[in-house]
Image (cartoon, rainbow, N blue to C red; front, top):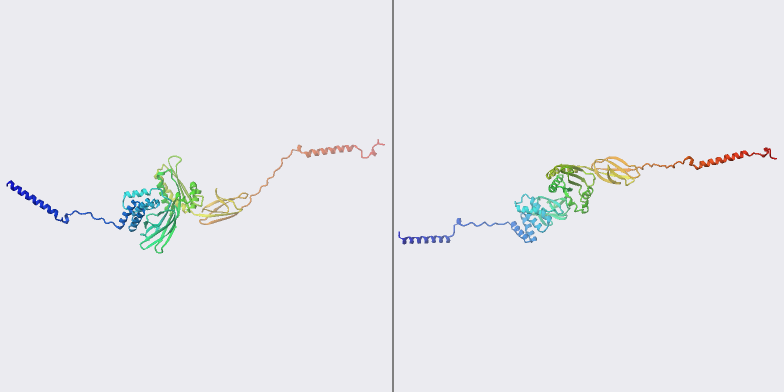
Length: 459
């Protein structure tokens, strides 16, 4: 084939190729050959509101952030909704509300795994808890819960609400009904708030508490675990823990004396708590280890209801926690079951001193609460014979004693003057002198004649 023909055929092939390529560009592509576009993500109304609320939070527009985030939670309650409301409360410096929301977020088993958010929540809840009380909301599940018109959760709550001391308006909301009422919260106390959906009533109950005084300064690395062990032990006997710092909110003037049992009892009376738990940890005097001292007292009885001194030789922090967990529950249960009784003593005259053994109970007229046990009683008053007697107090009963004290026997003391020696008695010598004078006179008279007629020499 000649060179000219080859060139001609080559040009024709190039032209055909170019035409084919042009047709491919112009012709529409078949469906199977088209690239797939990314599907459009359709956000739910709650998700849109959440995005708006978080944007407002970043812009420091807190009122708009709360409106959007609370509405999103109302539409779709979730643990993540509590997280966002908690972050907003922290930004507004509502510390207690923030800790309450974020603690319940961390306790919610349905929360989505998010390491960054979980770490943020833990950091925000790691600070000291402000003075607060607790309220457990009890009602049919599914109701939205609000405190002072701010949305805080949905029933059932994984833990009680944390509320500042004072009056609060608590409310729950169903799709067709809203129930609410005023509740007075005391620092350190836990309340049960029951809503009756049928009658629309609200019942508030104050749960019994134990005032806890803990001294674990010698083992700071275990303080958290020791506090948790105490709380678990107290809850096991159907009581709640009232920490010392929370109780002192109501009686700050007692802060300087709370190491003394009598002051602890006075504080318990002030905050209306019946029992006190005093737990202290000291290093052993000899060798390594610790001495764990526990005492449970009634606020009105001087003698402890139960006490324990437990040695823990060569113990580490974990061993001390284990020892507390073994010792405290049994001791608490026994102390709270111990029965008491009332003793009244009246005397004539009044103001006599009354003692139980060596413990001074007070002055008459007396009324005291004591453990229901046999006791040695002494009643005494100056100038009267003391009364010693043994009495047995019956549980939950009152024993009344009415005593008339007898005057003590009077002792007459005679004082005699020392006797004067015989030779120094003046009357003796006076008598002797008188007698001598009489004798001399008699002699003289005896020598003179009675009648002169018988005297011969007279004329």
